[in-house]
Image (cartoon, rainbow, N blue to C red; front, side):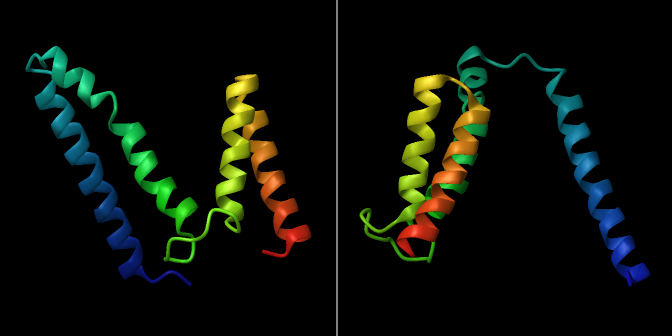
Length: 109
């Protein structure tokens, strides 16, 4: 059962997140952003995604693993190859996950 304290904390965190985002967007709209800064900010989502994905792929146990036995690395390679070959994200994701599952089942790694 969810305690009222937790509900209050979740609500306050949601309000804090919402107000900071809306506040910064409101302030940012009043200023003209330099084109170089705007171009640099376009890469922020990609860099955050890379910062989240690369450690999980290269060191899933917390230590850097051998590329030969790292099924997450091979699943990522398969996903990227399918994406580059077909340009279909859904197919790359499905085949990448399926290949990862098959490698874990059949190779026992």
